Amino acid sequence: MTRFRRTATAAAALAFTAAATAVLGFAGPASAHVTVNPKEATQGGYARVAFRVPNESDTASTTKLEVVLPENAPVGSVSTMPMPGWTVATEKRKVDPPIEVHGSQLTEAVSKITWTATGDAAVKPGQFQEFAVSMGPLPQVESMVFKTLQTYSDGEISRWIDPPATGGEEPENPAPVLTLVAAAAPSGSAAPTVNAAVPMPSVEDEGNGLAVGLGVAGLVAGLAGLVLGGLAFARTRREPVAKS
Image (tube, rainbow, N blue to C red; front, side, top):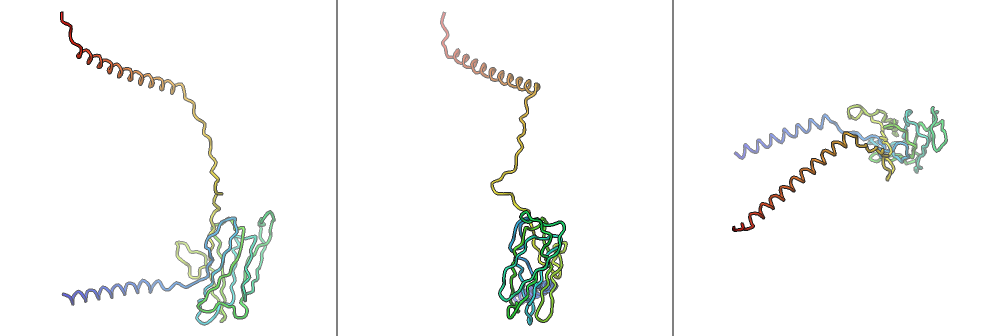
């Protein structure tokens, strides 16, 4: 009996291992890719975001990062943070209609940011780097998709350019996506209320109310009469009858 149990246990373990291997094998390892952090910002506001770049190569280093800003969501102000060992360059394009920033009408917007490593500053195997950007006012759209090119020292280029796929599945080469949410209402402010007019009672309502009032008064009077009658009857029974 013990041998049978051991055999059954071993068979169950082998079956579980085979099923797990099949599931995980078909799923495949998820590759690291360029992302934007945080992943969410507010429409109309300013945000500091960082493009997080992991190095996927075992032998080469990341020497260049090119981030393309979406054409359908231009941003008026784009600033980069200095990084030791990296140079940064921006390209601009014409926008129509112009972008309003602090009362000024801007006809140009940054279309591309390129970071290039100098000396020994490249992102080496097993490392990652973050490239910070401040931008705003953020457009009134649901999301911004930043197509990104990651260049390695051996000439290999990873193209993170695929927009989000429908159905929730991740594309093969996903581009960094910044989700934009609507600005919340200021704290302490309340939604305007409408003062509804109090309806005046109609003649029919007044009549119905009077009838109900009279009915209630009659019922109370009737109950009072019954109580008084009962008290009088009880008193009569207690009093002695006079003899003639």
